[in-house]
Length: 151
Image (cartoon, rainbow, N blue to C red; front, side):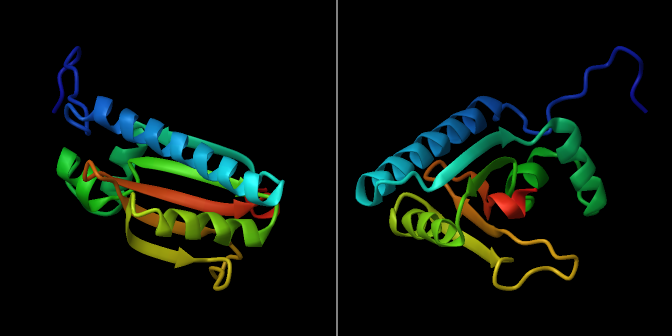
């Protein structure tokens, strides 16, 4: 039992600065992809995007929900969405174009893809999910969807 005044160590250990760097690098890369596509087509394929590091509380809750120990290994190697980016596009074709750019960049290793656009979940959820591994050996989840899927 935790005594009052005891500070719980971070579920990310000492890796928060590195996770923030990964988050920033992914955001910068998404900006590059947007600019490249806009230069070719004359249109920005992205309505907006958000990037984040999953909060400590949310990560701990996910570990509990999955029956995992609340530790750095679970947070960074078993659960693969400590870093997340949500990209919202106007059109479905833009979702697939951006996914293709990420896949072909050679910058990231795709470890998992789930196409909930073509194969929506029973509850109607639609989105395109990519789990990628960065050169720094961290995982990140990219969620791509259209404006209507985001609402």
